[in-house]
Amino acid sequence: MNSKNIEPPWKRWLDRLLVLDVFLVLGGAVWFAVAVIADGQGLTAPMQQFQRLWDPLFTPAIGLLMAAALINGLWSWWQRQMQQAAQKNDS
Image 1 (cartoon, rainbow, N blue to C red):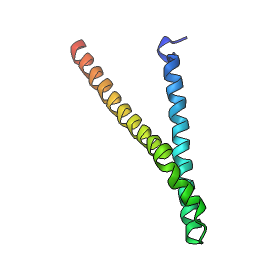
Image 2: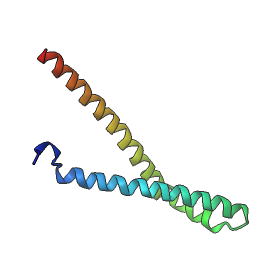
Image 3: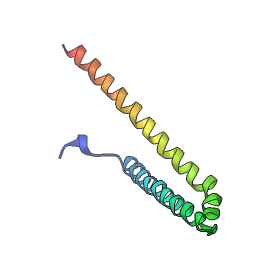
Image 4: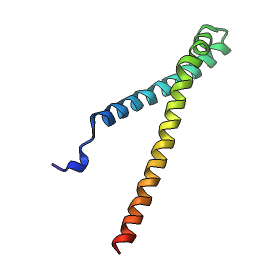
C-alpha cells in the first residue's frame, strides 16, 4: 500500500464537511430560485423563510466554500513552487 495515498482522519472529515457545504449552497440556490418564482405568483412564504435563514445559514456556508476554494488554490500553488524548487536543487 502506498503511504502517500493515506489521508489523515481530519482531512477526510474536512472533505466530507466541504461536500455537505457544497450541497447546502446548491440547495439554497434552488430554494432561492423557487422562492423567486413563488413570490412572482403571490406566494411570499418561501422567500420570507429564505430571508430568515440567509444570515445564520447560507452566508456562512457560502463564505466557507469560498475560503476553502481560496485556501486550496493557494495550497496547490505553494506545492507547485516547492516541487519546482526541489527540481532545481536536484539538477
